[in-house]
Image 1 (tube, rainbow, N blue to C red):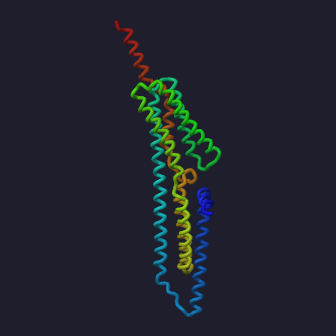
Image 2: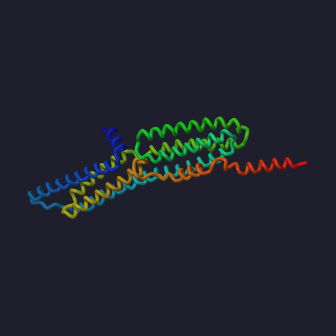
Image 3: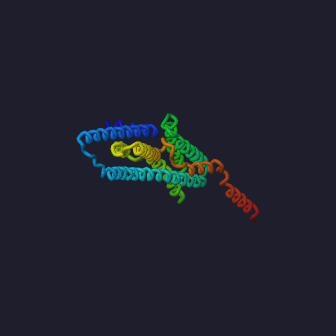
Length: 291
C-alpha cells in the first residue's frame, strides 16, 4: 500500500497534492473540534472544569516541531536545486571549451564535431523547456543519447589525426567532461527529497491540524487556525515545486546554455580561420619574394 502512495505523491500535480493535503488537514481540524465539544459536554455533565493551562504550550510545541521539519525539508530541496543550477553552468563551460578546441582539428572533423555540438546544445535547451513527461520528452532524451554516441564516434575518428600531439589529451579530457556532465545532469534531475519525507510531513500536518482544531476555540481562533493551515500547505507546495524539476514552476535557469548556443550559432567556424588565412598568405608571399 505504501508503494502506490509514494508513486502518487511523485506523479500528482503539485496543486492537486496541495488541495488533498489541505482538505485532510481541515477534516482533521473539524474532527478535533468535534472531539473538544464532546469532551466539554462530558465535563459539564460531570460538573468538572476543564483545565486548559497547558494547551498553549502543546500547540506551540507541535507547530515548532512542524516548522523544524519543514525547514529541514526545504533545505534539502534547495541544496538539490543549487546542485542542478551549478551543473547547467558547468555543462555550458564544458561545451564552450570543447567547441573552441574543436576548431583546432582538421577538416572534415572540425565541421562534423562542431555541428554535433550545436545540435546537442540545442536539444539540451529544448529538454529543459519540457515541463511534463510525454512523447516529445522521450524523443528528446533519445536524441540526446544518440548525439552523445555520435560525438564520441566523431572524436574517435578525429583522434587518429591528433594522437601524436600533446593537444590530443586535453581534447579528450574536454570531451569526456562534456559526456560526464550529461550523466550528472540526468542523475541530478531524478535525485529528489525522498517521497517518504513528504508523506511523514503531510501526516504530521494532519495531526497538527487535529490538535489545533481541539485547542483553538471560538470563531476567531478557528479562522486563525484555518489560515495557518493554508499557509503551511502553501509552504509545503513550494518545497515540492523546488524539488520537482520539469514538473513544477520553479526550475533551474538555462541561460548559460542558451548563451553558449547563441554564441556557437552566431559565429561560424570559418571565423576562427581569419588569422590562419592571413598568416598563410603572408608566409607564401614571403617565400615568393625570397631570392
